[in-house]
Length: 219
Image 1 (tube, rainbow, N blue to C red):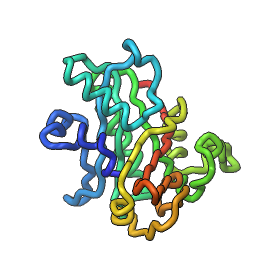
Image 2 (cartoon, rainbow, N blue to C red; image 1 turned 180 degrees about the horizontal axis):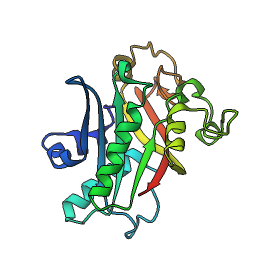
Image 3 (tube, one colour; image 1 turned 90 degrees about the vertical axis):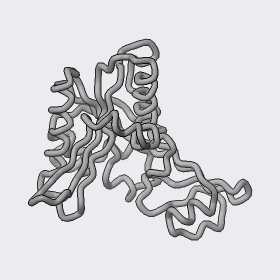
């Protein structure tokens, strides 16, 4: 996912130094086992009356634009919560999420939004996200474990971000990134991808457009 060019507008050097107040490391026994990143942006201004269909990419671009014109942010979006395998499944993801929520409140924001990348969606890569988010367990909670974490934490699904992250590359690049043999054109399933990758051998091009799910918390 780091081959998404929008990444450079947040994680690139020296830009990332401006976002250090929104970056966290999860530490257990003096060892870093997780990380969480957030990004501030101006919301409910002209052209921004709802969360963007462009999801992760667009909220970073919004924040970048705000910095360029010195516009004050009024809300915050989470960008990433990642845990080492040994730190998963024992409540650490919720702890990292809570750190971002506390950060947003400390900065004076009334809400935090999350472009959620559902954990098990890759197992249903051909299913539209609109159908996937309706899958439930017997207790009525989301089938997807990450969506369920947000559900249990009080988050509300706002909308789907149909093109939250876009990654474009040549066939050689996609072959390197995925370690897959890409020999035919069409919609190709790639391990870990939430939806298939569009491959065009004729145009030497691969395009991945990932949908996410906007979840909102009002603080």
